[in-house]
Length: 313
Image (cartoon, rainbow, N blue to C red; front, side):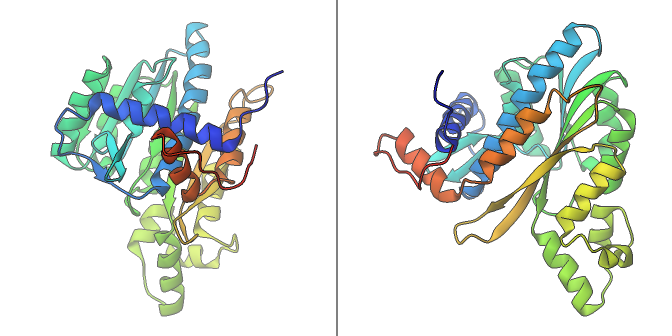
């Protein structure tokens, strides 16, 4: 029996793919790339894992006739490419979906910046996506357009919600969930939401941004005893949206400060969830990895010698 892949090797394999996929599209409008730090590599590696799990299971259900189509919806799509340092570009969320080994039937993206939306459309077309819709505008205002292209209620949907701040309205997530009973959701929650709640509590001020994000009055948010905004948001996903199965991972920066929380949830199904094992594995791997591991994996990929921060499997 082969030895289980270590978490460091898992990360390296994901980064190899993300680098290669970015390479395929980087010649298209070369000036367009979102610039982030190495922590973003951990999020993208987790998303690539989740997309592969979902698309593989969804393809089987669609081919068996249980569902009409598999659809990837990306509400904050960007240009399709991320720079985590001056030398390393990684594929963005929509390109990750486009490169799934078991392809989605449709990919729907919303991007507020019209120039980035145009670039993304060209990049996705270049990697072979045929059933594609890239909508320029605020996803909270254009969600009806996105859902119209995504197809009918019998679609299997993977929803990716990855804003830079607190721009994702809870009502937008709820509308999408209401249409698609068979929907899994990947959410990136900024740690800035925790600071916003702290300020609202200590200063006694209103917070429309927090209310929009959480879908509840700020006084109700402040009364919650879940401990964190991300914990409260997860309870919303489980109890309001009915996506009961899943978990979260905290992504930290170079000095170990929390930057955001990745959440990945699916619905209850008859019998055991076919997604659960793969999603749980993603969280277990991410929980052990840091930006130092990202640096080590990139050094290894670049041929600068093997650099490891301990061993985990």
